[in-house]
Amino acid sequence: METVSISEKPWDELLLRSDSENFVSSFFAVYLITNFNDFQLACLGSFFLHESVFFLSGLPFIYLERAGWLSKYKIQTKNNSPAAQEKCITRLLLYHFCVNLPVMIASYPVFKFMGMRSSLPLPSWKVVSTQIIFYFILEDFVFYWGHRVLHTKWLYKHVHSVHHEYATPFGLTSEYAHPAEILFLGFATIIGPAITGPHLITLWLWMVLRVLETVEAHCGYHFPWSLSKFLPLYGGADFHDYHHRLLYTKSGNYSSTFVYMDRIFGTDTGYRKLKELKRAGVEDDCKEM
Image 1 (cartoon, one colour):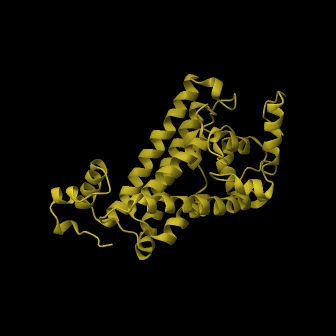
Image 2 (cartoon, one colour):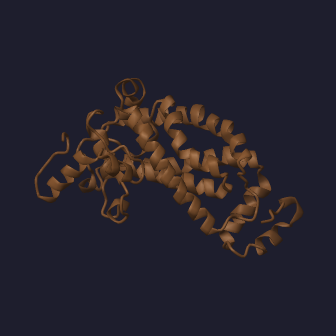
């Protein structure tokens, strides 16, 4: 399919020739690729989008916890102190600017080499959805094994224990981790796009979905509208909160988004037993299993 050079087409004509995308998506696509080059969009644009989605989706859970709102849906009764929450935010900003942003810049040539583009036309929704599904499947597989490795004694003590400083997670703790872990487990998120070289809009959609998923998994609340109640094999907050509550040698529940890997390898047996006890009406404070 022929790509369109922005310099060859007037702005209004580009909007009119978008027969597969609505006006709003066309407006943003044309505005962005008219005013910014590929590097700016792929690196700085991706970083800005990530920060916006991450903090806008994660910060509300801090206020929910402090105000005690919707407490009946909170998985654990314990709360994090304001000092602990502020420490998390400070470290996150440091890691995002000193680790995440440099990685985005360093990986840009790889994505370009593999075919990533930001030019028109936009990919069809069939292409986008197929690639996103592939990314979720691959990410779940790679993340599961990487996460299990991080729960070995030495790596947990020296690396992964940083993430587990928060036994009662809240949304922003999803990306609170040792820099080595950010690089190690971050590979699971970028390997799919790195292989396929997608359109930038696909990469952005994948990033947004991945951020929203991991924030929700660490939010500490199990709402009636949580995806885990409607989407088969989706982990969600209840599944991952169990992982944070237990000792690293007993936790299990290593999966990222979908839990099929834990189910296949039997690393969710403690969690499933707990769910059975709850269904049977047995009271449990969820602290040990």
